[in-house]
Picture (spheres, one colour):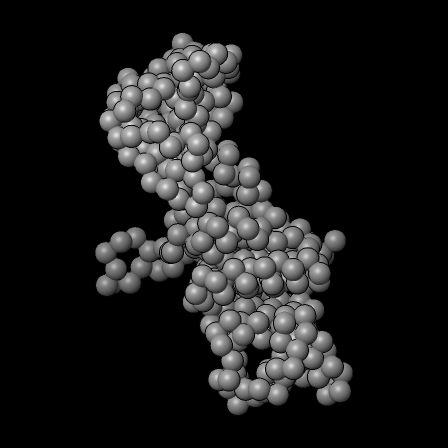
Length: 358
């Protein structure tokens, strides 16, 4: 198996005289990406995603750590000898070459015969939806088409690893969706290992087998999309994933009490006494109807509706509970009779609550 193994790789940038803040450092990263896996590095700008990508590509030297693919130790190997391919935000096509020659360029560097490399280039252009475009030049293509050419150029060389640094961020939303669909399709078809850098949560969740969430030079959590969304390890991860219902409090005597004391309820005894943070996903909260029988294992709250907004087939409803505005996702049927300043009873299954250290 040609898994990519990153063993405690790290990078420290020296502080310049002009810098007021401490110099950026990538803390030791240990990570294994399985052969044929689509792995995304997700995090805000400046968190170290691209630095890690460049270390893996060999574009910058590591201060410590090792990089392996299968039994090959690549830490000191030159970038061009690693048999990796890269796709960047800009397509970086050669303007003086035809589309076909752009795609075939890497094969030409490998001394593949002209007949064979052009045949491979034409075949790969078919796979990315650009059959018949081989004789055109890059300036005759749209931005989305240029990125398809860049993807074809990367894949035609059969790389051991495809590195992608926010490749769709310059495209408009509809083109981004098209490119995600295409990338997902060809990645599965060719079983290529992909390391994908993005700050777009939706993009990472749609494409990835697993995701690594980064912040301030640290890899905070690795997991499948559903796992990291439902079980974030800390407040940083939850916040970056867009989870707004973050309630600080204390766990004591098998009870959780929020700092403003507006939330208080029993919890499982396995949770240790400590300062704690309760994270509630909006879709797990349900309104309580008048005749609903109380359900064992659920926690109930009373609040007041602040406002509601229709969004993509559901209503996002903010409910005031003490000092908190709890965001709830309700169906149109649930929310149709809700109005601002109206009292409301809410319920949530205790299994859907996530507690992390405060």
